[in-house]
Length: 346
Image 1 (cartoon, one colour):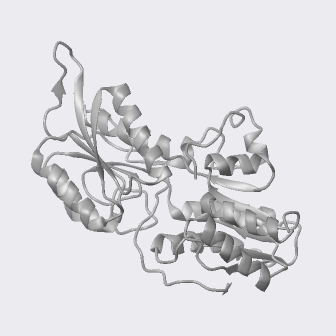
Image 2 (cartoon, rainbow, N blue to C red; image 1 turned 180 degrees about the vertical axis):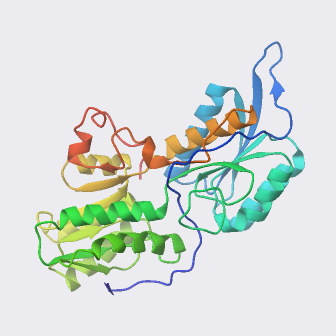
C-alpha cells in the first residue's frame, strides 16, 4: 500500500462484532416498584459519549424506547467526547446508589476498565453499547468481568466488509486503483479497520490501494481531500469511505470533476442520505450501521439482566439488519430491504 498523506495512528476506540452465547446477571440496588402496580422500574444510567451527534442521538433514542417498553427509567449523561468527564460521571453515578444498570457508549473503552470494575463491584449491571469496554480494539467479547453484554460491530468486521465490497467493485478492472479515505488516523480503531480491509484486497493482484488525507468524518474536509486526490490520481477507479458524512463530500468532488460515471464509491454508515445514494445508483455498496437498534438491544438486555433473565454475552449489531450487513441495489430491492431507509441522518 502506498500513501498520499496520513496522520499517526494512536487512538483507542473500537466497535465490536460476533454473536456469542451468554449467561444471566443480576442488578445492583433492588428495582423500585410503581405505586399501585407490580412492574419493576429499572433505573438505567445511559452514558452518551457526545450528545451532539446524529448516530449517538439515534442510539439514545433506542435506549429510551426500550426503557419505555420494558418499564425502566433512563438518566442520560453527556460526556462531550471527554473521556475524563465520562469516567467522573460514572463514578458519581455509582456513588448515588441509585442505578440498577449502566448502558455505556465509551469515549475510550480502554480508559473505562477501572470505573467499570467499580460499577460491577457495586452490584450494577453493565452493558457496553456501540464500542467495547477494554483494551482490545477488535474484540466483541466482554473484557471486564461482570460486563453482561456487548452490543456492537467491530472495526475489523467493518473493514473486512469494505474490503469485500472493494473486490467486487474491482472485479472487471485490471489494474484497479483504489483510494481509501480514512476518517481520522488519530484513532487506533481507524487503523484496525483499514488493516482488515487491506487483508482482503491484498489477495487480489489487480488491486492497488492508496490512502488520502483524513476526511475528518465531515463532508467539507472530505470534498477538499477528494479534490486533491483527483488532481494527483486522475485514473482512480474506486473510492472507499468509512463514513457516509464524508461520502457526501466525495460525491460532490467527483461530480465537479465530471467523473461520476468512471468511479465506483464504497461507503459505510447506512445513514438515510447514504441509503438513498445507494438506491440512486451513486454508491455501489454501503456497510450497514444501526445505532437505534444497538441502543434498543443494549438497554433491553440491561433491563432483562437486572431482572435475572439470561442475555447473550455479545451481539454483532450487523446481525440486526433485516437484509444483511451490506446495502446494495440488490439487497435493498429484496423484500427485507425494500422499506429500509436508515436509522439516522448523517
